[in-house]
Length: 507
Image (cartoon, rainbow, N blue to C red; front, side, top):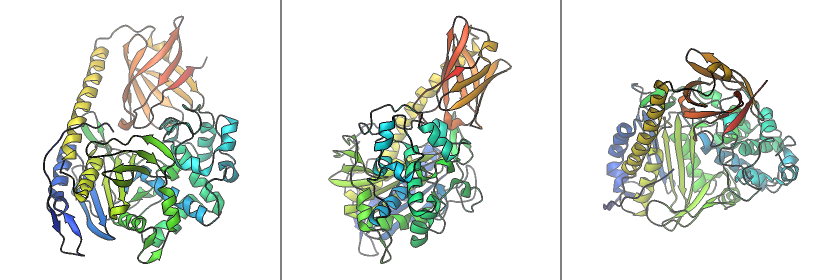
């Protein structure tokens, strides 16, 4: 997330709470409701759930807005949201626990427990450890391969076969690159080491001991669940309802659904070094293992105040902010963005859940609450992020408008539409088909229900509008040689995958 700098001068007073003698910032006590309700309108968010835990007590736990756009069914503390990559901390915690129990070692080679795990380089395949899987240091570019894996009909075995044919963007252990398929592998390592399944481990080792009775391990379970938020995204300048993401083929990376009530228990346990209601649920040493740095992300610069490093532990981002260690993660999946933040030294936990993936408020509110508790000035991060987002959206919409204007001009193509029709192949993805449909073309993917509408721009380029808006609207180029179409380069929104995929036309 890019950020802009603006200094606002307003210092919130800290006021004493009436319960448990804790000190609650005035922002939390007096301003939070207005701040969130204003953001619902400003960001066009149907619903938000917020939880703040301090010193083992819940300070705030409430829902705002509605489960669905223009609906009357209100969000409450038990409303389920898909939490996306906040699932990773659950997976990493289970593996760290198994490490402490000597059921496996984080230094074990991944192939010891998962023989089907492979990378393109045989030497790297033999060297990858369980720890490597959990700290994103395989050499992949962030999100590399996710276009193939998310919302597809691929099985987990299919994913491993295709992952093995990807060429890493970097050398092994040299560069941090966020790799969802690695967490799938980690989850299956845990399952194989215990003769169980990842979802059963999550349920029996975390959900059940903590009383997280509403939480769901698999994405398919939210479809028939009660009291759940609907997924939303932006389609141009309009917010729309979209289907829940199909993530169970890569579940350990992002399939959990939960509520702020349930997550308050998870956060309370983490802040008390694995204890909950007097019982040790997770070994303290396992909690600390997940918070030990393994990979370098950057120098940790932030909008305001001081920040000197940004690292990755096991399923957690680690950074220093205002002299405090911050342990956090975000989660973005079809129609939802969420954040979970811990400041262990302050025994402070913050959870923000939203039911549209088209907002940065889930991060803005986190920073606002953190600053309030750390005694920093009020910054109005929501307004700052909103200003930046509005400028960014304006540029994107103007760019799309220019391309649509080009389409309306009916500029000449290099070859006729019929020449683009046919079957194309990419290794490792598979195939796609391009069909002629009136004055445009249509892409059908082998492994996706999603399709793409291709409208001629000029020369060898088309504007591709995907049937699911989260995949974006992008310019798609074809390669043409000697008046014959040779290939097409598929690109989707960066939210899904940064990498382009070249599909060569089959003869």
